Length: 101
Image 1 (cartoon, rainbow, N blue to C red):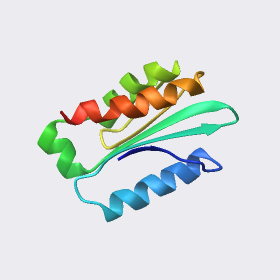
Image 2: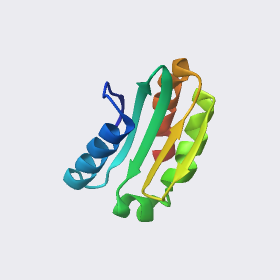
Image 3: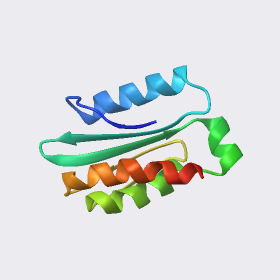
Image 4: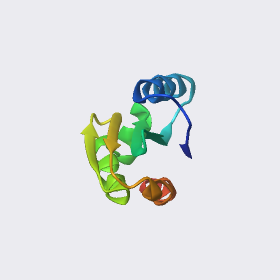
């Protein structure tokens, strides 16, 4: 799943991300959002999928953050990034699927 959401805060995105992770098996989720005109990305990967495909949310979010002129990091299963270019969110969300190929 790769989508942009309208939520009031980064904490609300985190709450949503963990709720979806608890409900969906083999989850690969990338959420884009804007807070005060600044773009944000959140990457969540289920434990099973991360092990099976060798995926790391921290590495993925750092790569996608280039599209929003930012940076980030986190854990292998949950990572976030912030940036300066909200127009780059669309490209980042579209590129996210490439990590599953």
